[in-house]
Length: 397
Image (tube, rainbow, N blue to C red; front, side):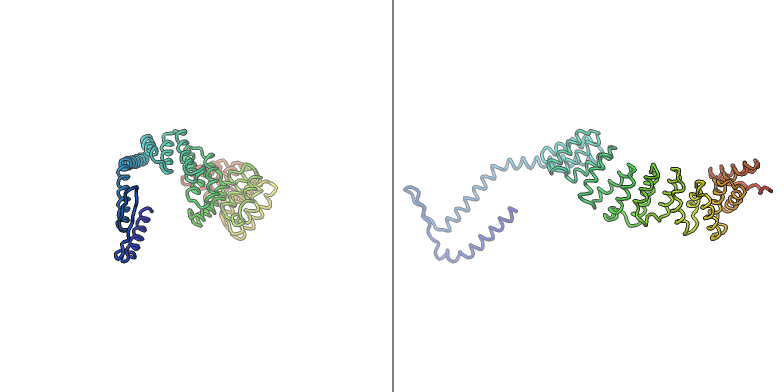
């Protein structure tokens, strides 16, 4: 900026000289200066030239006096820059102690946010929490309280130290200030997952999509995963229903979420709670996992579910998943002959360890110990990932 001002003044002087030169040549003028008994006379051009020469001489003298100081200052800046570079290189190498020492020497001459944050990272690497916090405070003092970059660095260090609960409030505050900041969003996503805060993960997915961190499909997958994990963590039917009601209407129709809800309801001792959602899902066609969950029911709804499965079997004759569900339902209803019939028909098409175990219980109850033993062995072989043995022939009544 100073150089531009000098250039502008020089241009103005040249223009003025060009305009005044013809008149001054014809009439150079006369300047008279009286000092006591002395009188100094000279032309105007001579006076101007003398003033310019005097200004140049004064600047040269001042520059000579300032030269040693400038040289020393430049030398200090050079050393500080070299120490900063050495510190950053040591930081990259993981030599935390040397990095902090070099950075401290550099920052003693010239402080800057990047240097303070790098020194805090070096202190963090040495597990020196007190020194780390001091460096972070220096960064804050230089650029104001709760400086965004400083807070982000602090949150990252706290998370790396395992103090995720302390890092999350800082990140949430930063997210309010800059909703599309990629670094904040990535850290929030990671910390929410570490803390099993799946509801917050689900609510964060639209922001991840807007920030360009995930695409549309990944956003949907992440939201489904978070919703399933959220329901799997429900401690009561009330909290499970609360998580279900918080979902969007489209999400409630997704297969993975419906199965997660029904599975957790069954684990909590309320298998009837998922019946409505499972029926809606099964209207679109047989689903082995959904039918297996549908077959888990208390006595009050067992008859209705048996009727539903029989109706679905008429629409999809011989479907092994529906046959398996009917086998389980009839077994729970103590209709052992029907249970064995449907289980055997299902196993003829699709081997299943749980079905073999159920069939073994039926044979055991009827006194067919050899058939029961073979069914149990088949269930065990399937659980171990081994091949099957042939089923025993049906027992004659």
